[in-house]
Image (cartoon, rainbow, N blue to C red; front, side, top):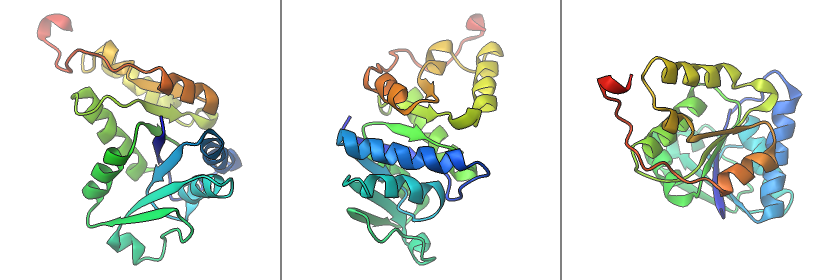
Length: 193
């Protein structure tokens, strides 16, 4: 994997470990020669992961809608900043540029981006690994909800296995490097429930 997209919060959250791990992820990318693809902002965890990459001589490509640039949150030190018109165009461009996705703590926007990429993978629109860096158990309840989706017949176990989870950066990158997309479709018949 040469390029990885990171979805994360534009805030720092309540625990200092979120920022520390975001920065460390960016630093790890720089050390491994992985280009960071992200939302282009200089705030919150988004800024931390970008700074972690840039301050360790890594490459960072930001993808930002014009209307957010006008709110003066665009990171000024990026290797490249790609401006787009809409949020959907942003996700599409990020998907075009990336070999995989890592999700850090965040809010509605982070989850929306994460689930759209995961859904595209489930539908076979791409075969890229989708990971969660589960810092301090931030996503434990979400992971439990995904298990409930399987138990209640709304998600196949093979599709659940598409979601790669770790609380360790190197372990998550290793899982992503060895990922193979499932060959089955997403639809569940009544006799499968």
